[in-house]
Image 1: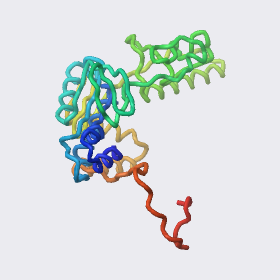
Image 2: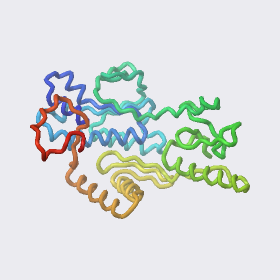
Image 3: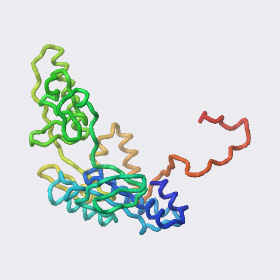
Image 4: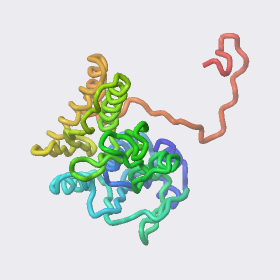
Length: 298
């Protein structure tokens, strides 16, 4: 994003500027919604005011979703709120729009061509090819279909967990590819293997209890589904903040993050800008000086 802004600042070609200031996020799940909201907030507030030649009205942030709604796993009222919140942030939400192709200059969405220098994929990933290695049954994304004890069918001593596995939950749907699922599976399989090594009886089938789902939408907006309790707006955003804060390791980390978040929230700013690669010719090296740090020693 920083590189795109820098290039747009120096460009005099209107079509190139339009492409550089177009950011497309593919996938309307929690990852895509959070990414689109973050880009809109960052681009239209913190970054736009740092450049003299960039008009924030020229920015385009587009969220593309192949399905009929974003956040399809959330209850009916929350996706609508999320779409409206993104629209208020200036995000264009395109529904029922499958991506046909992506290239260096943009992407093809159905019959629509979008020229964009930045395209971010948030529509899921293909699993590692472990199913092909083992010649085992695989789900649509290539993940290994596993039995209730996380073992591979026909191979009782081979276990698959996390993103490489497709585990059908009690509701008949595959468990989501999230860190809490993988952590619980890892603990379960570790205990199962230990019990087998000790000659103990087999464990009960793996069961994952979903404590809820959350998605933050830019500044002060979020949605949260805790089953019987559903939150949206600022209250959901506070809940999201507290959950992520409590997941940090120690009090010092929590305090540091809390102070940084508070500063960003009140100032609408960001503390650090970093460009990760040079986009122009390097400056000439300074004259030799014994007080300078030798090249390659920094």
